[in-house]
Image 1 (cartoon, one colour):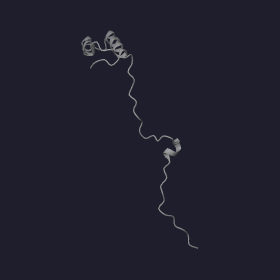
Image 2: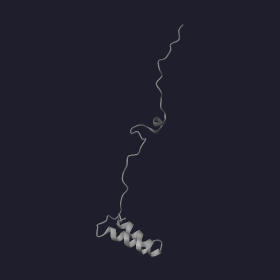
Image 3: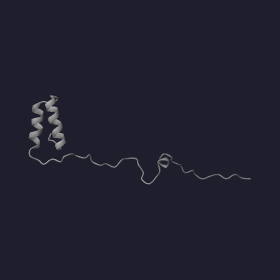
Image 4: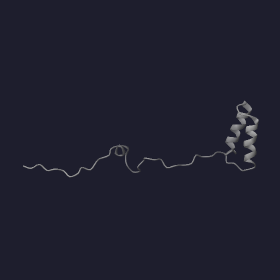
Length: 76
């Protein structure tokens, strides 16, 4: 799997120096990356969060009211 950023490449080089990964693993990743221009950092993709309703206060989101099926009137 190739590196996604320069920061990731630096992190793997640090792990290689510490001996936490093998030189073969680092070399394999480096070979697969090639001469590609890498960004400094990769930002996580922005996904819409589920379950949030825009424009409504927090309390109103929790409270749900049911419609009552026809009210009965008292006969006097």
